[in-house]
Image (tube, rainbow, N blue to C red; front, side, top):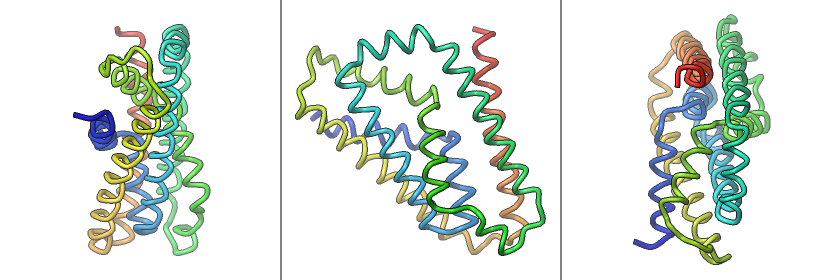
Length: 203
């Protein structure tokens, strides 16, 4: 199996994991439509491709840094997710009107997704595991580009399919049900952040 195909399949499996970005995509696609889901997917795919490039060019150095500061990274990431989930819940708790539904900008959602993806410790750990599993002592620039391309295409493929399916069922939900789903998404994201912190002290 080529390194490109391995990267593509890895990105598909990684993106399919239900995490903060998935919950955010569900909330925004149901509230705003397919275009918003694709924007979130694009941001996530770009970050994963950038992670792939960085990890392939300096995995040993990055692994050492992450190992040294992983507790602080996980705590910061957990606190960020708790806050992010709380803000989602708070916005969804308001009486929804057309004006409130459109208050979130595509650019804001793009940047928010980048922030959520960057500090997600699960993504970082998965990338380290992936490159360790490739067992390549020295990665060439061509291999780096193949990995990054595979990661981006695989991730984007998932988000296109996921957002499209969400957009198909979007019309089946009333505004009230979308509000409830948004609340649930916020709660789940906050719980994910809390669990990331709890795991540090129970391991």
